[in-house]
Image (cartoon, rainbow, N blue to C red; front, side, top):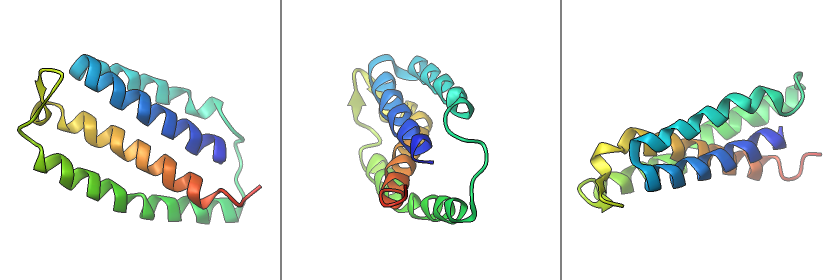
Amino acid sequence: MKKRFIFETIIGIILIASIILFGAKGGAALVLLAMQPLIGRKKFDDEDKILFRKANIFSLIPFCILLSQMFVFFNHQINGQLISDLWMWFTGSFFLLSHGIVGLIFFRNKK
């Protein structure tokens, strides 16, 4: 399960960087998320499932904070493009990033 959260964190960082550099065309980096079933084991025990659900719930806290900050800077430009034009891409990448980081925090003591 740790591999999955590491993978989500890396994909979130790559997605944010590609959106900043290439705009909406950088969203093609989301295709890397399709490789996720190839990583990790297929069956999870009950403790893994519980921790995964906790990570889902608690990842919404930093996601909402980042989302509110994004709407504060809604009319600013990044690399010549308005944030208002790319808000959907940013929200998806921020959620992947926050879900990966929160999941790693929950699974840091699990073997």
